[in-house]
Image (cartoon, rainbow, N blue to C red; front, side):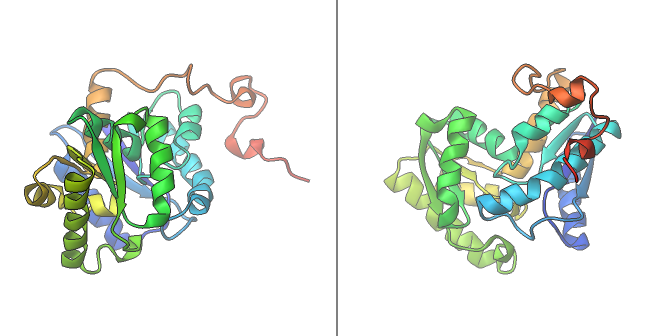
Length: 250
């Protein structure tokens, strides 16, 4: 089984290698995992505008990975930017969104769950994502730690303290039975187990959950529905031969 993790924004090569190593450590024996990164896009995704900026390059790169023969792709942002569009473009490769996946897994683990997100500005989009994932009724709350994404890893201890405090608040005040980390940088801190011990409820790491769900679906012979995510008509009809031909140019 071959799985590719697609980073939809710019990232330093050292961090790419660190994340790829973690994914390979988490993977089952026999699963090959590679990480690829777009060559243009936002430095971090902390707004809907940045999400939209990231989509064209991520979609083209993910489509190219299908042609490389991968069995599944993980869209490397917990906001799942462009997930539905990318699923339209892929018909031989499963595409998994970590945000959707971690919310559904969290909803399976209790009656209610909360999402821990980096900043308050991301709270509305987390509610929208829960609605699209079909679990909005089980969403107890979205709690922000107010740490910019790019700063989450600069002071691991401080990030841990704030995440744990937010988690305890969600459990005590919002009666959350499980927590989902709402950011891939949080996931790659690799601290879900430590947070779980501190707050007393299951904590879902979106980075790890997306990988394990991708492995499970591929091994079950399943992929996203092409009825739900139909190939764009211009492509399926053969009127255009590649994604660039979808652009109208003077």
